Amino acid sequence: MSDTMPPQSQPDPIEELIDFLTPAVTDILRRLEADEFTTIDFIDVLKSDPTANAAFEEAVRLWGEQDRYSRMVVHGQVIPLILRRSGLVDWVGYAHGQADDYAVPAWWRLRTGQ
Image (cartoon, rainbow, N blue to C red):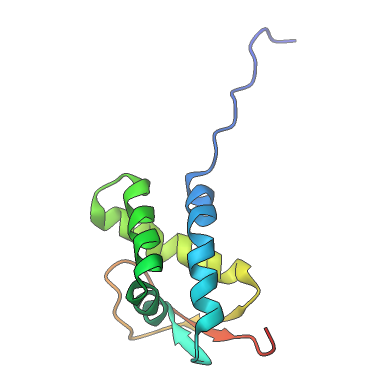
């Protein structure tokens, strides 16, 4: 048996941002009027709400890298994972031809009766 202890597991920084940003994303999802939207469309709507935009910008800041790289993480990993886990939308496919400076956008469809 080894005398060394296993390293303490560190919290996953993506999961921490997901926990932080989920309330803002869920709030916007529950108020959306479109049946289908792209990730870019969703982020535009999210950023049009002052409270949600403040949470979005704080998530970018919390990631702690240069602004561009932090936005890549939030656009490409954090928001899509929140959308997938929300139970409110389904991933429809990649949004080919839709420009996003930070990630590969996708199409999402609101689930009916949610």
